[in-house]
Length: 329
Image 1 (cartoon, rainbow, N blue to C red):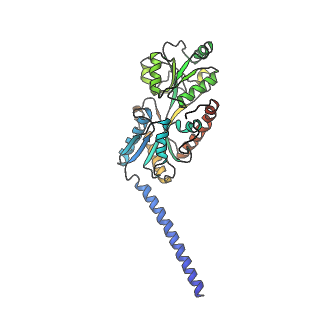
Image 2 (cartoon, rainbow, N blue to C red; image 1 turned 90 degrees about the horizontal axis):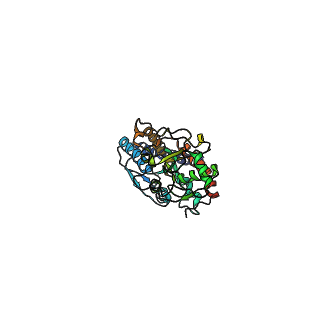
């Protein structure tokens, strides 16, 4: 009887210890999330300063800083079609203090490369979509086509003579152009640029007839009539340029957007992800905030919705990339 009683006592003590340990662990985790952030937050932008991704990150970061009283540092890590900055984010501590604003390259890079330095799905914790913008086909004013149907007729009358620019190989602007070519049954030659601005500059100068670019990339030049807009890839007319007809209403089944999503390294505590998600939702709902952005629509989502969207974008564009043998290596 003494042995049994002793064993029961030890088992009871062990159970109590385990219970207290679990309670303490949960309390510490909860306390850490409640106290977050306790130090500066870094948001990595995998592009050079001054572009739309940088602007979106700074708008979000400024409002976070105002709300939480901790500095939010925007760190530009451009290069290798976002791989440099994204790799840095993937290898950062999973504590909520390093975030990254990713775009469509995040979902297209794996299909264009034999080897990746990180896993697009497993190495990141989605937080929220933060913004999106459609793609516009901008042309030099001297191009005789006034809409997409006239452009298709022109391309068919002069096979393989029309060139187009984009923001780079495998970018959403490039893939939107390739999808348009397939839908329209035409051939055009892709002239690769290292960014949308050089391509736009060459369109204005008449070196190439057209480029596919986000709305904001050429909005001032469009407003100044330095380029024409033949079509936009939004599902319906876009509020900032309602006069531009969509691809769909001109008879081409094509809807595509450049998107911006906030991610953290995989393993970031769910409570901190939830806190960041709630903050993004608050920020994008602030009245007048979108006025600071050139034709970029601020949006939000749940982490689960962003995860589903990323997977759907990979499923959508990977077959096209492989069919056309688009390579970045």
